[in-house]
Image 1 (cartoon, helix red, strand yellow):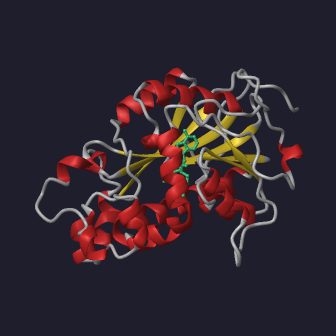
Image 2: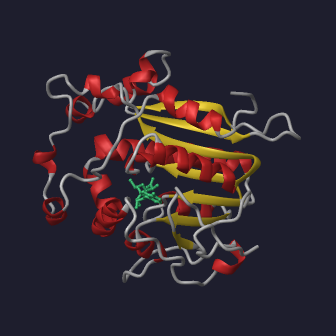
Amino acid sequence: MFTRGRSGGPRSATTELAGDPIRSPVERRSPGRAVAEHFDAVSGVYYEMVDAYRTDLGYYHARELEEAERWARALQPARILDAGSGPGRHTRRVLILGLETVSVDVSRNMLRELVGERAGSDAPATARPVQGDIRSLPFRSTAFDFIVCMEVIEHLPSFPGDVQRAALELTRSLRPGGHLILEFPLRLHSLLRRFPRSTVDWNRIKKREWYRSSPPPLRYQRRFSLARVERIARRRGLRVKERMFVRIIPSGYVDRFPQLQRLDRILEKVPLIRLFAREAILVLQKEDPTAEHGPHPEGEGP
Ligand SMILES: C[S@@+](CC[C@H](N)C(=O)[O-])C[C@H]1O[C@@H](n2cnc3c(N)ncnc32)[C@H](O)[C@@H]1O
């Protein structure tokens, strides 16, 4: 199962990853180098950062976890890839379910967090980290049944080129009929953020050294049109099975009036309005000429 990549680099077999240190050093001169360096710099404070911006980053993170877990439980995939895993939010959650999981990320420091090279870490012993790029994945074709790719494509250096490359690679790595859960920010939400006091006052809550060294958190962030991303996915043989939307009301208002979160939960389901959400989560299924449909968490179609 272990093969050589197009670039001559190693391709991974999950059976050979157990107990390994982080594998497959990534090309440090690639256009994504600045992204890797940024995430290397914030890796040690990633969760702290997410918690600090609770009405902005924190809310999406909680929702993404819920949705990825719901699908993992329903699909019971034999092998999962956490693509752009960071310090392993999703990896940990699916490992707890007892599912075999590989985590790939360009940032070596993020993977260090995942495998718990820090003292006092609660890293899962079964984590399988691989340093690699979603635009050129170091895995054999059809290796995975389910891929989780949350909050990653917005950090790719170019659009549409890099997103097309990533879609191609993620699709290649999925078995026919396998599922990809993909989350990314939507462009229309920027219109809502033009309203006065619609954004979180980050100056008020910033208080950490890291913020000065790497401002603002999670930069290199692109926003997408839903239709465009879906078109790219469809051209790579992925059909949309479910669409979910996260947070309509701009975070600045929710920060001041937390009770608005309830209203948000309703608005996230309203057609047209939900296109203004901050994030979209798509569940995509790779075409399988031999089968009709895969399972759905609620036992029904999209
Ligand atoms: C905002 S974090 C999200 C981490 C994790 N998916 C989560 O939801 O908590 C983005 C992660 O994507 C990684 N990343 C960015 N570009 C990447 C690429 N081209 N290939 C693989 N990982 C990448 C970063 O290093 C970082 O760990």
